[in-house]
Length: 143
Image 1 (tube, rainbow, N blue to C red):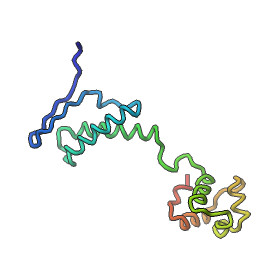
Image 2 (tube, one colour; image 1 turned 90 degrees about the vertical axis):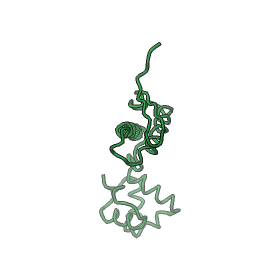
Image 3 (cartoon, rainbow, N blue to C red; image 1 turned 135 degrees about the vertical axis):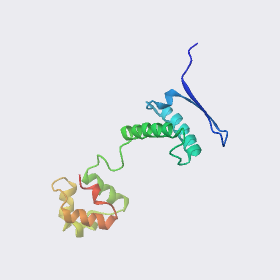
């Protein structure tokens, strides 16, 4: 029988008990491990309540950073790796627009078509127009 290393902690005020095996400090490698660590993190957050000097604050920080790293590796931020053309097509579809509806931003429907077909890049003025029209950040188009 092998003994597993663990951290045992009992909060003196709340009498809440924590029994954390040291494997909570490893990065999750799948969604099952991620879910387990997420539940532990939630419990730690409820217990610690922003007290950076709490004895379990470091454990909470390490688990949180490992979960964030897993998220970043498996779920890229929204808008990452999306081309300008894909973004404009998405905006057009979600707002039920046609090429003619963006003619004022692009200087004519033919220019909208050329952009959507990859024949022209966005100009600074077009980016500004899209930003204003859709209320989005220009960062979606500036790489």
